[in-house]
Length: 114
Length: 112
Image (cartoon, rainbow over all chains, first blue to last red; front, top):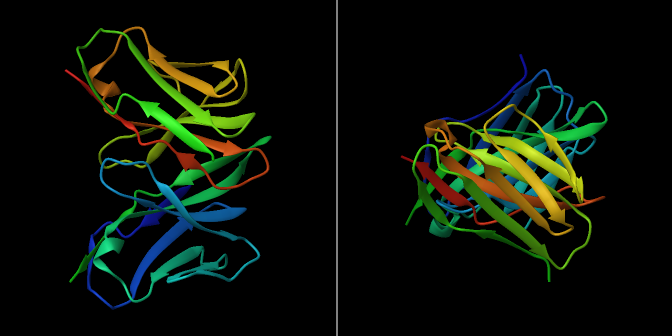
């Protein structure tokens, strides 16, 4: 079956360290992979997108890698801050007939401790 | 600027009552609009999407319906709510040709 998995356990790290979140998928051939941040009681906010032919993407303290052979994306936050504490969702955009469809992971909760 | 409005923020409704959630976007025209539901312990589930006025595609059979009476308005409705309709409902939009989605602030619906 097709599925997308993220670390189910919450990630706790110390301020200033690098947080690394994992997104694994099976049986998809995604065109894009996107990462979103979601705060409690709020809608997800788009962070980064990486295409199937890209290996790495950076934006300020954020870095995303995409390995289509391993079917895995890693999301890194360097020099983490308490304000980075949130749930991070990955989403795959896949072809679904004549349309494209976004498949979402359950998210990983990140807590950055001061 | 482009913004999305979704209301109400929270809603408690009895079983069997009707539902109407509204979403409007500003600063863009002809967006693709989406309704998602996020239940506890489950990922975002796409309920409906619309590529234009009056055009609605349903992703899953359910107790809900959607309508798009105007270009920038998307409404989620139910005639009779079920307990299983409880969840966090999110409206999202995407401009045709772009890839990322912009979400509203969500409506927490509790059916009692």
